[in-house]
Each structure stands twice: as C-alpha cells, then as structure tokens.
Image (tube, rainbow, N blue to C red):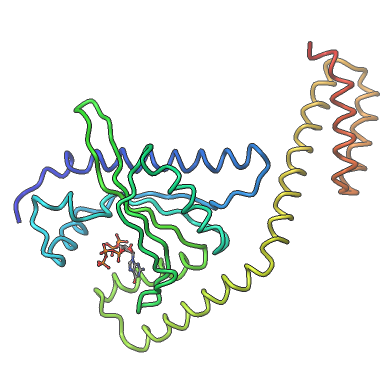
Length: 265
Ligand code: 0O2
C-alpha cells in the first residue's frame, strides 16, 4: 500500500467531527434553554485510527487513492438517545439540515434490519463541507444514532470483536445474541414509562432552575437588606425547600424577584 500523508488526510475529518459535535451540542442546549425534553442524551465523535482505515480498505479492496471516496466512516459522530422513540426525532433533525450544512448520502436502518450479530443502530452517511485555510473540501462522515441500551451492547461486542479479531467463539456469540435480545427488551420496557420519566426530568429541571434563581436573589439581598431580614427569608426558603413543593417554590421565587427588582435597576 502506498504511503499516505495521514496528517494532511485526517485534518479535514478532524475539523468535520469537531464542528458536527458542536452543532449537536447546540441542539441539546436549545432544548434545555426552552425547558424541553431533549431527544439527544449525549454526543461523541472520533476519527478512525490509520491502522483501522488501512484494515477496512484492505478488507473492502479499496485502493489508497479511493480511501476518501469509499471509506465512509473516517469521521464518525455517535448520538446516544435515552429512548428508542427519540431516534426518529434525531433522524428528523438531521434530515431537516439536508442541503443546508450537510448532504445526506445514505441511510442504513440496522434497527429495523438488525444485523446477524445482534447490532442495532441507525446510520446516516453524510457529505460535510469543510472550510480551512487551505481551501474548501467535502468529506464523508457517518452519524450513528442509537439508544443507551443499543450502545451498551455495541461497545461490549466491539471490544470482544477486537480481542478475537472478528472470530468470537460460538458460545460467546450466543451469549451476545441473548444480550442483544435483552437490550431490545429493555428499550421496549423503558418506552412504556417514557412519559413518566420525561415528566420527572422536566420537574427536576424546573426545580434546579427555581432553586438557583432563589439562591441568586438571596445572595444579592445580603448586600442590600438588613442581615436579620435576609436570614428570615433564608429560613423561609429552607422550610419550602424541605417541603419540596415546586409550585410554592416558584411563587416564593417570584416574590423575591419583585423584592429585589428595585436594586437591579
Ligand atoms: P469502528 O471501529 O467502530 O470504526 P462493514 O465493515 O461492511 O460492516 P460498513 O460497510 O462501513 O461496515 O458499514 P456499516 O455496516 O454501516 O458499519 C459501519 C460501522 O458500524 C462499523 O465501523 C461499526 O462502528 C458499526 N457496526 C456495524 N456492524 C457492527 C456490529 O456488528 N457490531 C458493532 N459493535 N458495531 C458494528 P467499523 O469500521 O466496523 O468499526
């Protein structure tokens, strides 16, 4: 195989992964900012190792000069969702960007069409534009979308595949298939209490936000009011906090905001 300038080859992929990660993280931030449930649990990205690129090129009979065109996952982004239903939402969010900041080349649904190994995940192959000081380029990238349970299985299976160089012993393969089945059932079971969990997450977010507002306001009062008055307010806050009633805490927070309004001008 011809010698490649790996640094030069991989740089635009590195940039693509970094930009795509930031874009996904901003989607997450936007959901949080509006107090909405976010279909993305976490995002990660990686550049494929040169040894792994060479291995894949050899396996697929791809000549060096065609690596960039034919190895689609040199740049990879992984989006993890809490629930199987969220995957569809994430797919829609990505499809909406098609023709804007990325171009969808292919979609592979390994959830509907589970691989014989038991692998489940949704893949979207994209073409992504990279602008750098050396000019404009387009690179291929693979976006993998899967649930926490699907990921748990895939990460462990990948480790075993690496150890056994793709020849996992049949008894372990069998166990992995059982694990894939268990992960599938876990996703289904979790889906039945999805609404309950989403509601609980929203209440937790409201609680975090109201408590940090109250603490900020009380903090400011220490500079403006008499110490004994602030301590009285602090005591009321601790009592409400112990009760844990979100509505009462929100009313209390609104009252404090009103009280501190004149100092903020
Ligand atoms: P890595 O180390 O994760 O980068 P192929 O080699 O034909 O299976 P192809 O044609 O590039 O792969 O596309 P495919 O099948 O969509 O798979 C691309 C990636 O999906 C793989 O990259 C894995 O990350 C993941 N994947 C696919 N099948 C499996 C599987 O059975 N188990 C696990 N754990 N992951 C899988 P790489 O290059 O194989 O590996």
